[in-house]
Length: 355
Image 1 (cartoon, rainbow, N blue to C red):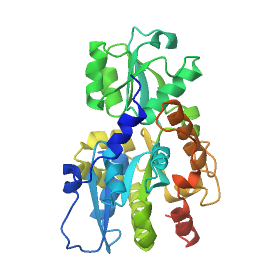
Image 2: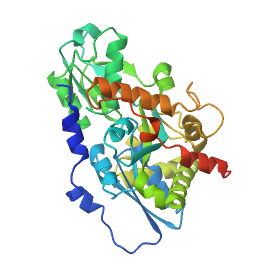
Image 3: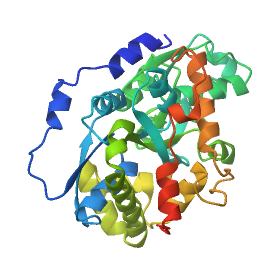
Image 4: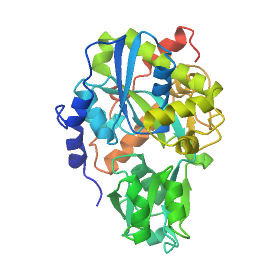
């Protein structure tokens, strides 16, 4: 069944006394100013590991906590236990609906093929999906991607059952036939395709049309309450992250190994997602450089890549807001300032920084 807003928002309000929260409590002795980041086990957030490993901001003590439920990460941010969250780019309207101190300040990576909507072989046309179960991350961009695909093919977005399923279990569900299809990211998409003979891709973010909308992407979020008194520290952290991306582009082999070690992933999976040559174009995920992120935020002149427009982050906020209203996740359209803050990128750009 379609996930309800109440069920998901209860997860956002998980107590700060949870074991995951306790795991983030570290020693009071630091080499520098503490910056705590939470996010998925995902190569696209590995820049934080590079920033720390290469000491790109010596006066910061950067730590990254891998948490597989993004709602847990945002709960920790709301309770003041993390300063940054790296996650997918659909949460800002949800945070706005709850008056959470969560602001999306930059797009992080564009899915440029790493996300795929895969169907079982017996599904011969989009119309065959009516009444069927589709595996997605309920409350995440995969659910919106499937909804968009259905409507583009003349099918009501609510004519299927959205099933929340852990990515590494999706192949088993496809093999067993309990679901008709799944929206999966790498490496799970490739694994599912190889596990289910004659399964096929009907929508991929490698399509230029998907890339131009920037619908399926990663983003970075900041604790707005913490930012009020810690803006210089926040700017140092952003600069360290973008310096890490620039360093990776020149040193992709070493950088990928740092990310693999930090995320506890295989080097093959890291390369599958972010590539081997540092271009950001030889795989399924394209990281935004500082200038590209600033352009997407409207904080620097010029247009970002992939046919996107200057300041498009606000259109993206409106698009996800619209879909969460449809899915019953939020009740209304929210003002941009409730969920987006591009002022940090603007301040860095105005200071002369270019990444």
